[in-house]
Amino acid sequence: MAAWACTLGLAALALPARAAGFPAAYEPLVLRPSGLPEHAEFDLSAALERARREHKRLYVYLGADDCRYCRRYEAFLEQHARELAPHFAADWLVVDLRSSLSVRADAVFLRFDGQRRSFAEFQSDIGDERGHFLVYPHVWVLDGRARPLMQMPVGTGTFQTVPEQLEILRLDR
Image (tube, rainbow, N blue to C red; front, side, top):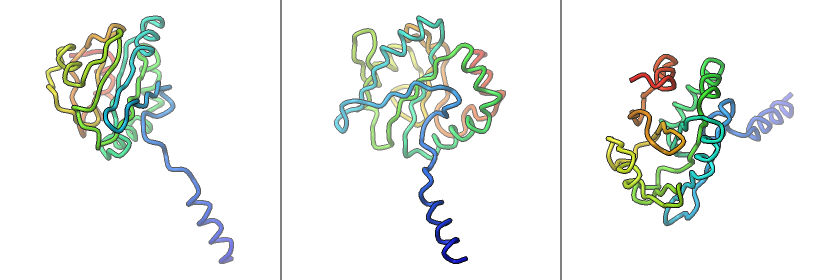
């Protein structure tokens, strides 16, 4: 009996933990940065091209693998996938930018339209009123030309009810 319990315990340790990031039910396009550790450059070119081709909007999620608030939001999405995933799939291409808390705003770069923009330049270019502060999780809702469709809240506790998330997806202001 003790050997069986020990084997069961070891098997439980061998189970993989849920990976960080947007849940698979939302079919996210996961982008890992290049250029680490000096900078984290995310190339959005293919995502923008795909969004234009499929006539979809972009739900760009910048999450950190080691961010507990990101895990909370991702757990909320996982818990409500049956309700929310069809709404995402209808009009949105989810782009999951994977980062870590050690990556500062001045080290984040976004590439699209043949140009490389720093996080601050990108925020300024799209008229994002949240300024140059990088708070995880960070979400942008964009059209196929990387123009913002609405200002998004950032950080913990934001848009973590089904009605709030649906308001965002419907672009209710």
